[in-house]
Image 1 (cartoon, rainbow, N blue to C red):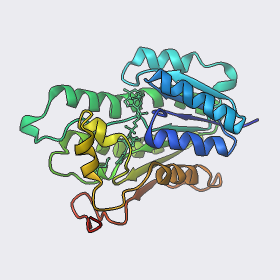
Image 2: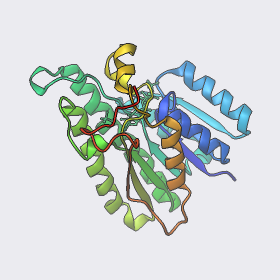
Image 3: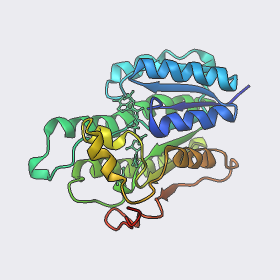
Length: 254
Ligand code: NDP
Ligand code: 8X3
């Protein structure tokens, strides 16, 4: 029987790249996201390419009733989840605190903190029941440091950092690993979402240096997921070589 990985936010970027690498390594997959067309297309592609079972579940992680319906409705054979990749997340806006948008704040807090909590709250009892599991949370360098105008996004990722530590303690008696992956700049749809579809502004973020790719992070996620049972990486910060932290960059490629 194949192992099972549940990856949230698999319709783009890091989640989509992670789905491919787990599929390539013979995991059956539960993939989630809000964009049904993309999710269905990815599911069909993964099934055809890797001959694995794929269950696409369309839901918004911010809506508790949708998350409950999806996870509580899993058939017995899909409940034995080995790996949960809490990846769905976003940034919205980049303004000083005194000019921040209430709507942007709500969407980041509801997605990055509450959404991650809802999924974890519903999946972790299944892992406890099966006496195994590994939760991999997507934090960020923004969860280790704070940068100008990053205020609320940074705060949500600091919360992920804190929750990862808390999960590790609470799930310790149940043989469940918890890892936080904290990337620096990864070129995905992240900046397009942050700047509300302004592709030119998004492209500028990655000008003059080689950013990380979604594949780099997916490879890292798969690496931590494939370590032996007695080994866990608690916390891993991964940066483009050209980025020392959230402030210092070597943008000399232009
Ligand atoms: P993308 O924008 O490319 O992908 C984000 C994914 O999250 C999409 O699949 C999207 O799916 C999903 N998502 C967003 N909101 C919701 C929601 N409310 N309900 C369900 N799914 C949702 O970004 P990345 O791949 O770059 O980001 C993935 C994670 O990595 C995020 O947590 C991000 O904060 C983190 N990260 C990213 C970095 C970067 O520089 N790119 C660096 C550090 C961390 P859909 O819209 O279909 O719902
Ligand atoms: C995304 C990386 O530095 O843009 O989490 O906040 S950063």
